[in-house]
Length: 237
Ligand SMILES: *Cc1c(COP(=O)(O)O)cnc(C)c1O
Image 1: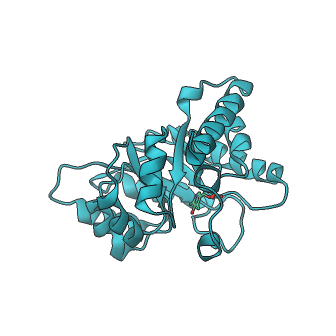
Image 2: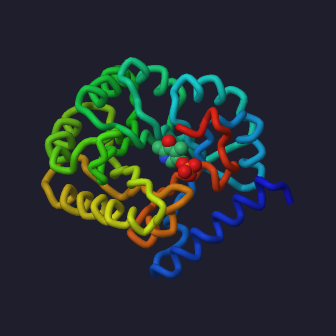
């Protein structure tokens, strides 16, 4: 077995064990391998080893890489901070899910770029659950207004919420952020907002995904545990 194959199988086994421990169906958890800084051939190798979904955090990097992905896959995800001037380019890459919508301005740019197409783009709203100023994402209290605004924008469908939990030595500290995201999704769903079908909670990364699964994650975004440690050049992202 290749090293990539061994890592993917290990992450899948750990995700399955975490789901079973939480009394959840492992089939309800989607592993998104975050392939930022990796070459297309590394992504192809991971897809051959059973990865079905991969995610990128930079539009230009994704645009360069996608034409070189020759293996089939179930989903391309965009997980990084998105600038509205990149909305059109990103949509041209047919992302199955954009995890990181965090403003009316960005949503409007996406909706505008979809005008004249029949497409419905699935999106998640990114929430800053940890309160750390360095993190992108909106505050929880801003969610209802944003969701109501997006409900009026053609072409977009909000499918759930995404968060990047606080990073600390002890992954247990991320649990509060995961809980917060789940509660915010429940609160938002209870409001009468048209078109809102929140089923997705995108939360959990290499060092905390088992805790995220215990708290209800449906999509875990895993970089280093799937592809190996990032080199220094890619470490800060
Ligand atoms: C890089 C990244 C991940 C994966 O991080 P790892 O710690 O390597 O698993 C997940 N989500 C986002 C938004 C990222 O940028």
